[in-house]
Length: 248
Image 1 (cartoon, rainbow, N blue to C red):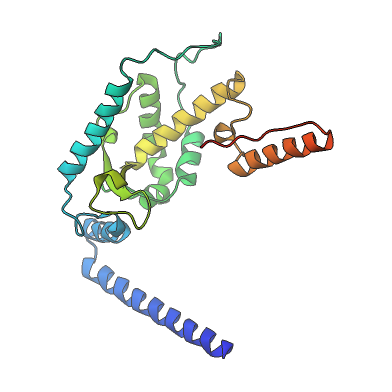
Image 2: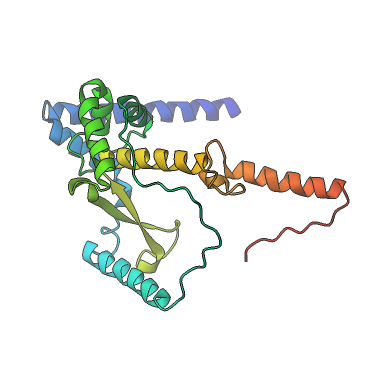
């Protein structure tokens, strides 16, 4: 009986794979050599779960107004609060970023996720495929942004999609959504270059919090949990009272 169920599941799986292959083969044949048409067909497939307008009456302008009002409310509620107290200051400063080497940019591009934005002029997989040809231009763009301390106008734009906070919530309530930004690939490359130099500066000057694993390389929440467990275990062996507090 168990064997029959497995065989039935395998047949359904292979049938679904065959149908999917036939579908995409036909789509490729219809698009032919028209790369923009093929690219938009793939985008519609990838981002089909992000559309909420089909099941609700929400519009892009409506979400823009709601999220803008939320930000304004937060700013208004915190406008009269005193500035946070600075307990200590570091003598070191990061006055400017330094130009990126081609090897650094290549590493960023080749290790980035293969995902694109509809605003990208070239799909990400093509950028990675022809990285040897495009590397000098991408390196110059990233280095220029770091030297000027700003991005060009085009990478400042992103596609923002409203997504439900979790499945099962009321789709008609805008408060149940959060905005997810999908920037262009080149802006992501510049962002990773900035993050790399900033992290290098913080590590070199010992400015990272020692017990905050989110900003350390090769650290994770699992390591933070292990550290908490080990400290508690050490206290118990030394017969030292310990307390573990959880935020409410």
